[in-house]
Amino acid sequence: MERDVKRDPARLIDELSAAYTERFPRSAELDRRARRVMVDGGSHGYRLNRPFPVRIDSARGAYIRDVDGHDILDLWQGHFTNILGNNPEVVTSALAAAFASGVGLQHGQTDALQIETAELLCRCLGAEKVRFATSGTLATMYATMLSRAFTGRDLVLKAGGGWHGAQPWGLKGVYFAEGPQPWGPESEGLSAHLTDEVLVSRFNDPEDLTEHFRTHGERLACMIIDPFAGAGNFILAAPEYLRTARDLADRYGTLLILDEVISGFRFRAGDLGSLYGVRPDLVTVGKIAGGGMPFAAVAGRGDVLALCGREGGDRVAFTGGTFSGHPAGLLAAKTMISYLVEHEAEVYPRLAAMGAEMRRGVVGAFAAEGVFARCTGEPNELVPGCSISAIHFPHDAATALVGPQVVLDPVYCNTLLSQRILQLALLLEDVYTLFGSCALGMAHSSADLERLGDACRAAARRIRPYL
Image (cartoon, rainbow, N blue to C red):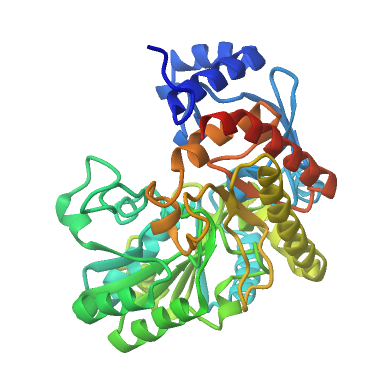
């Protein structure tokens, strides 16, 4: 018997995949070649969407061009890195000039550029000291190690749905799973003893946070929070929640780490925590701060960071890898951060306005085709605007998208639709998102937002018969 079209996502995925394969034949061919030499055809799981990823030929501004010749509206923007668009001239020209003058590649020495970039970061983040790394994963790992050494405690508290990198204390409590333990470990190969040291609380739930501190506070080395839940689909921390975290950390002698790898320099020319009036003990930054190059940093209290230096007895082996403080990475970081500081009054109000326009357009486009959608990324009373959102499909219009524990739970939202089906449907309209995530930058225009709206309407027409 033929299956009922309605509520048959497998049939919809098959139809979308067939159309996708027909539209991107060169990418399909390259995928077959890639799979012969790379696991799943690549080296970053998020980029390897099924049935295969589009292969990119070039990227400029708001668009990417794939090997099949499509100009695709890019709302992924380098993992939310490219706030000025792909390959912005302000950064590429600085790098080109450096390479032409005989600097830029690894030299393995100290230089004035490190000092200048560190001074700039400390001013923007209100930090006493900083140490560079090459990825957000390393930055959060070192911040955790510093916290455990400084406090002499072993437990790490995080919020469910928060992604803090593929490091030992980060690989738990990221992806929601149905059952009695929804926030378990995300990887095999980890010590059970280590994952037992990671406690998972509910994002934007001050009462749950208070209970965790009441029960475990004397053993908590740190609490690490992304004040803008990135992997949790772009929900801002409620002011009460973030301030409660700061107050509880102070009361129990726990260090507060703000993971601002995504949120740093996204809302202002510095950290997001300052808009809440919350000063962390340590803050991690990367992505935007690196200007498109591999760059990250841990910044904050000098007495905590001293533990990885001679003053603190070299107790924490945050010595830096070969490419920490890489000349090209530091130059891109200094150039990008300096630009954002100089143009802060121009950049962030425009991004805030476009974010609001984007959310209205997306929700309206789906509604026009009879599909109920909602967007995360709404600002709050302390954060005036937000230029990153994610598209969700709640089962009930009354569902409040207050945290990852809601938007990632299929009980509340159609997660298959938002996390897999939507990406294929939008790519057939030459619009690239990941899991429905839409990140805007200064290269995007109102015309691009209209194009996104048109793509959402077309996607809704494909999806509607199956709902």
